[in-house]
Every structure is written in C-alpha cells, then in structure tokens.
Amino acid sequence: MFEIDSPIREEFFRWCDTTVLEHSKGDGTILKEWRPRKGDDGNYQLVFEIAAPGENTARHEVPIPDKYNRLLDEEYPSHDHEHEN
Image (cartoon, rainbow, N blue to C red; front, side):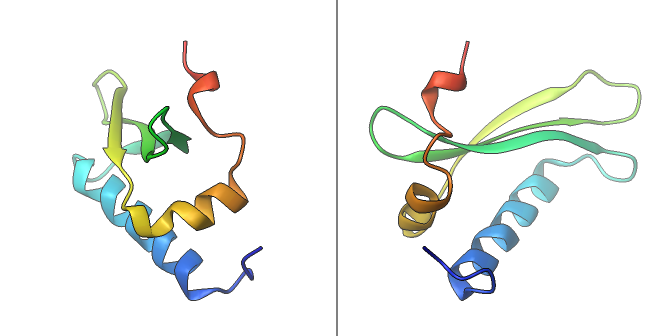
C-alpha cells in the first residue's frame, strides 16, 4: 500500500486536477463526480462530470497514464466497469 504522502499519489492527484481543469469552462464550473474506472483491457480512465453555469452536465472519460496503474490497482480495486450502466 502507498503512504498517504507518497510522491506517486501526489503526482496522480495533480494529474487529475490538471485534467479536470483542462475540460473546465472557467469560473463557476462545478465538478459533480469523478472516479477512476478500470476497463476490460486493464487500462484506467478518469471518468468525471462537470457542469458550467447554465449548461447541462458533461461527462468526460480520459485515459489515465499507465504509470499510475499500480497505485490504482491497490487503492481503487472496485472502481471498474461494473459501475457502468
């Protein structure tokens, strides 16, 4: 298990922040949900929903770099395709 203050964990969450901000439409945008999802191929995606003021919620799925797979396998073992409808 990774330590709470591990460099790879900090780097992963910075990557998540940057990724969500890149899809944000600026001030007032609300992050409604986010989670890693493991696909049948073993790769992860960051699945998140954001809403800009006056707009419908937009769902995004962004591939997570492979270097975070071990962290995600250990920390988020249940976040995979079974949550999808």
